[in-house]
Length: 294
Image 1: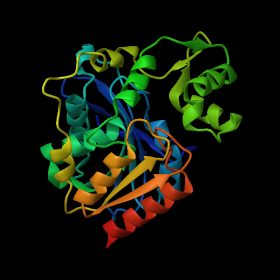
Image 2 (image 1 turned 135 degrees about the vertical axis):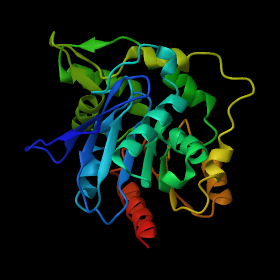
Image 3 (image 1 turned 180 degrees about the horizontal axis):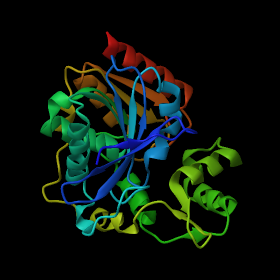
């Protein structure tokens, strides 16, 4: 629990911890300067710690970077109860890890679901958040984007080769990454899929994560604006994909207007969600960390 075994050929160590309900969960631990606040990277709904490899490799050494696999993703165990695949439980899992590692404050990088978790964490454990990056997510999620995600999450698929997987993923997401080449789609396939013992390529998550996602929305709906407002007083960065169908430009502008410490950066010709290695995102991240250092 919480221990990390060194890997001589990698920039990170694999670490493990236990959730309150006993699931063995995984994180990547990139070492860095101990006199700077560590970065906690939390991925989107169907993603995993590999999603932050480029960010972590660029920043590792300057500060510690921890990238988590949420329950049911990557190397983390699956939940016995699929109804535990919900943001409040994910937040509790991550706060349990931070407590175990003795990290009272972190800079939270959250993509999509990971950003929703940041806003919930701001309500539950505000002192933990020294700064936040929200990647293409806000208190209002556009119905068209939610419907698109719901149309493919949890659907079973497998492919004989990585090329087949990449082409299939391209068919689903091409409109949101119009300038990507084959190498980009292959990289996305390797981030989001795994090779089974039977030699097939499949998505690297428990398909049952879709079960809570497909339940009727709560009535009244969850209000995330208080979570955003709870971030006031700490440096924040909002990265929005210019082609995003989940976070509208109007919502992003409203977020920046009501939160003085939030900088809005738009990545052109990219949809949901930016990979954070785009030039605009890289520059924004560097400015965020400079503000936190100051």
